[in-house]
Length: 180
Image (cartoon, rainbow, N blue to C red):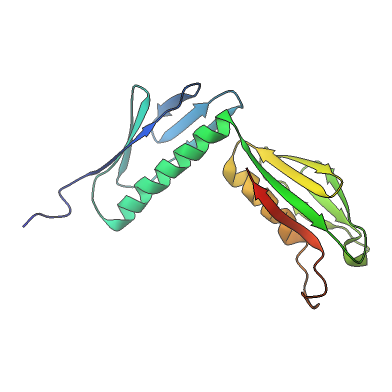
């Protein structure tokens, strides 16, 4: 009988051209034309190694949580490589039918003014090194870190969540319409 514990899980992640990777301990730094990203992969039972233009991800055991960790690391590396080469962008659409909404970016905050006629502006936090651009009824969130770009877009969408009103009538808000 062969034990599941004996075999290792091994994945190879190809590093694309134009991306430079540096491994120091459990920290991987990727730099490319758009910028530089670093992430600490502190997962017990998983080892990282560089071999030429490849990164080897090895799990010491073949358990479900180790397979999941290897898949997570592979996906995170792919997102890092895509971020430093092309970047990520989310597009949000501003929708209103009752009161015209005004969007302003001030430092690390997005101010949503006159939402449903409210006097105080609603505030959404900009996470990390993400750029937010407002064009009429469109908001474009751009950056190289996929997690930060997605979280910022969600913060803007969540800031315009409507409570205590009929959602069939009050459909005003900022909604994510495109991920690129």
